[in-house]
Length: 230
Image 1 (tube, rainbow, N blue to C red):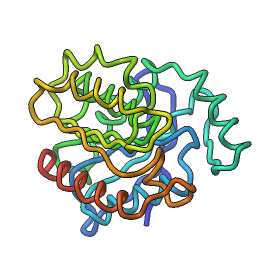
Image 2 (cartoon, helix red, strand yellow):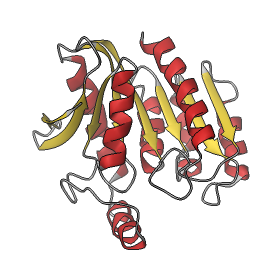
Image 3 (cartoon, helix red, strand yellow):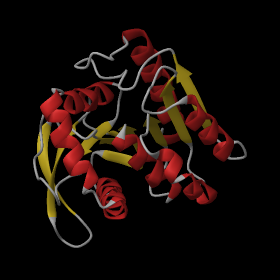
Image 4 (tube, rainbow, N blue to C red):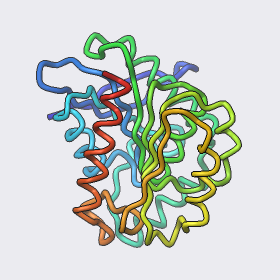
């Protein structure tokens, strides 16, 4: 359904992204933000799904400053490799690069006005950061790893935000979920949802995949994004 495109960051550095277009070729924009495994077959599939739901979906290469073109799977070796790049990520730079992606998308003929984001694990953290910078018009985060360390950024949040967690997630305990709820309690147009699932429940290439939770979360995320992006 999609194709690889080239975009430029604010400093002029070029990076790749996977773009999938909806039927008719136009729609609201949606940045699909990867996990630590790069813009792999799963993230491309997610972009294709959101394109089928009416969005211009773009999945940028978050690690382009560290390891351009990363595309790995979910073996133990892949996990260790991905965590290596994750450990070297400049989060502020990555957030700014994604904000550049949002600006670039708003200039695309295919994109109708607004641009949102949806991210998974590392990408969920980055989607939250984009929302806190009000760099997108709506944001969705799935099991955002490390979000409890940046909740102070919620003070500036005006962007609609939906966060999806798994109750059985051993990486993100319910104590963190409660902290997120508390940080967002007075923020308008925000919601925190919890599913009977483990970390990574959206990915059908992982043992933690939970089809029921993934489908419900997708339906809710789709409705949320269409509500605020059009």
